[in-house]
Length: 267
Image 1 (cartoon, helix red, strand yellow):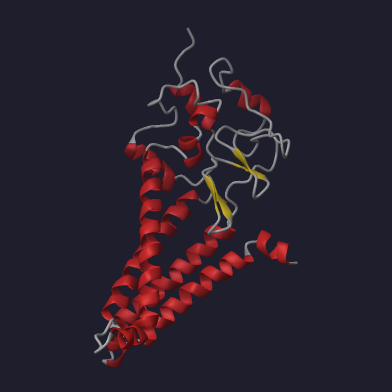
Image 2: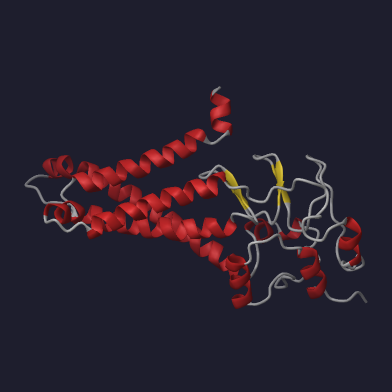
C-alpha cells in the first residue's frame, strides 16, 4: 500500500499542498502586511494573494495530473491518417528511422523517449519532474512553464510578506521565539524562489531554441542529433517562432517533417 501511494505521487502532492497552505496560514496569522490590511479593512491585497496561491495550487495539480503526451499506439494516425501517408511525407534517406522502444515495444515518434519512472514513452520528452511526480512532455510542457511563472510570483510575494512581519526584540532568544514561524516561511520562500528562478530561466532558454532538457543533456547519444554540428538544431526556427509555436500551438507536431526540412542534403 505504501509503495502504491509513492507510485501515484500521493505523498508528493499532499506534501506540496500542505506546505503551501501552512506557509499561507503563517503569513495571514502573523503581524504581516496581510494582517495589517485585514485589520484596516483593506481586503484587496489579501484577496489577490489568496487567489494567486489558489491559482498556483490548481496549476500544480493540472500539470501533475495531465497526460504529458504518452505514446499510445505504433502510428501517428491522429496526425496524418496512416503509416503510408506518414512515410510518403518523410525522406527516409535524410531522416533517421523511427526506433522501437525496448521497454514498451512501441514505435517512438521523433523526440519521444521512454520514461523509466512512468514506464511510458512520452512525446517531445523533456524530463521527469519528481516534484510534480509526472513527466514534462509535449502536452503539458507549456503549462509547466506557466506554473513556474505563477509559482515564482507567489513565492516572491510570500517572501516580501514574511519579511514585513519580522519584528525587533530585546534579546536574540526572544527575537527567534517571536519570529520563528515567519523565519521558516522566509526560508522556504527564499530557497524555493531560487530553485524556481533557475528552472524557469533554463526552460525559457531551451524553449527559445526549441530544445528539450533531454536533448540538451544527451545530445551525443540521440540518433537524430549526434551527427549534427555542435551548434546545429534541426528544430530551431528562430526565437520568435519557437516561442509562438510553444505557447500557441496545442496539437501534436510531426517533428520528422521539420527535421527533414532543416537537415542538409546528403552528399
